[in-house]
Length: 302
Image (tube, rainbow, N blue to C red; front, side):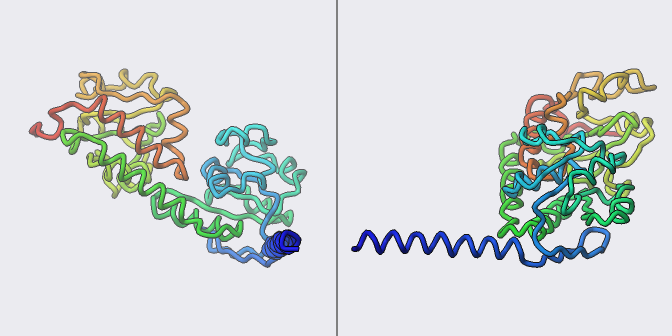
């Protein structure tokens, strides 16, 4: 008799839990995106198309990868998303392919030109644009609301702890190293106010691109020559031709071979403002440990 009662109790618990989950899925969802646009859905979206890799990764970090039915051509992490239909890039998506996937919502960057076209077709669009740590924390929260995930900010707490741990792992002599991080060969750099710049600041180094230039400014190459950084960070895809730029062969970092060149897998981690930022901090910390000149902090600059 007792075993029968226990089985019935377990069965009732499973049934009630199922009802609760089903009810949560059916509950109306109302969330405001980075455009200030509030979208209202009859239930938490079950079919999602993501047109930005960092948003793809955040959906998966929230444990909701199974809701993705399509992604942009650059979304490649976690590996499971590479098996999903690709619908072009964030700036040049294939609208017909997106419509064919019957999404409940499409996640786009704030700068995406596709939002109005998709909205005109009756497809809800949720626009988010993380550029700073505060943005990433906000985006995690917004997606958590949209997907009905409790305590989404646990992801941010793990990121924050990981960045702090990376900073603590660095030897004291690295502090004060003057850094230039090239995002692409435009050249565009990562400024102090970008999420990359904020990680570098927490690692105790000095970004040669001040916050007043914006998160990812297009710069005059002469600025880097004039600032003469101790260490340059660049992805393998953007390395070609760097030393041939006028005056760059005289930059201390290049002259003394204090250059970290990141393979494509690491570059993806570094340039995406999302759940892998703790890993990004570890990559940058390893670069500093391996390549920063010991005398960077104490050298007198004119």
